[in-house]
Image 1: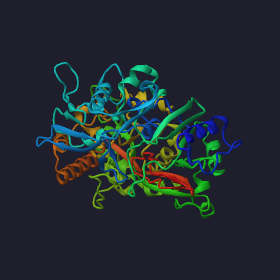
Image 2: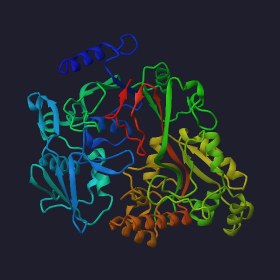
Image 3: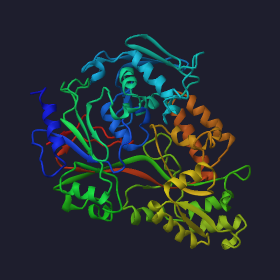
Image 4: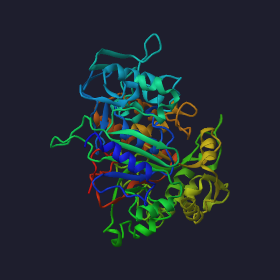
Length: 543
């Protein structure tokens, strides 16, 4: 029966497009919709959430994050870090296999250290053109230009860094760093992303662009639960690609999906009360999970006064601070977000990361009197003479920006909204053509360095993600000390100091820290939330 089950599942799925053909109750499938679509299941291109979620079911890396975002073993069962912080030596499990594939004559193949070397070299290779190449930017190179990776034997591999970088293990947990087989990549070429061969809890079976993706249980997956039972529990995963969010929501309400993720304006008031809690009438069908999400929503400000970069009145520090004090974030979250999220009062680092600190003595609580005082000190009493400030945003965030516009108008700061398509805004920001822009930063890995790197002067665009052109010698010194230190308490102290500098200099106006919100069918157990909003299905059961 174990061998027949995959064929039964696939047959049922391929003849069924949803409601007309029901899958038997004894076959447990997790079903969700991905409105954005999936472009590739090649880990080297796991850039956005849709791709990352799919890749995470199919592949593994050396290490992984648990639900608390702590680095844990995965393909590597253990590792050592040299005293100088430059050499990471990993010892691999001997029971990890690539999924059966035609490239292995429909057999599975054992993962060895050479596969790790190949996968990381491929990620760094310019010919791959991976958007994740930057992840290995701190890895040293040999004289031939290849990464300095040492394969000692089939179960031991070491990676040498240029300089100590404390978050390196967290970087290796990213899906970009998943282990892939050379044979499959070379056999499928550019089509590997549509014919993925991995080691994960589920294996690839079927994909019709715009219609459906089917993954089946990997019966040979190496991880087990506490009782010794082999993971995963589910028989498979089905992903559909309905673009219309309202249609997908109705499918969920009718029981055709097991989860919807995120809070869309089209249905938030259907599910939530004003306080942000699930309405009681839905308790018999679903439950809601929410957890601090490592996503900071903010308004960015170009602070560069010459040599490029858009110019606005916000290049004056006191005007930037006046804006920060000039609107009520708590009220904004209550009325526009149903309290899903946390007011952005304490700087750029979100809750859940080392470096976040709630300081009641210095935070951006609503204080219009303080804003007026700062305007006067800047030479604009009652806003007289202050030029109109243009804020570029997208339609998705227009309601938030209109709220800020109205509140700032009450203290004589005039904001003009310029609503543009997302692609246009990204281009304007990357080319320094916007002086004031709506943005967000979702952590690539769970370390505050991810957020502080936005203000490191050597990362100024086009060399990195410093879109505000912020430059501060003391900040840079603290940043460099933090990323090279392995002392967690020292790094926490340094991150707090850096965050304080950003608040004082105000190259950004933090709006809120997001929440990862999911609405899940009551039949689903074990779908634990995490602050990276990573979809982990290997531990999920369906009743």
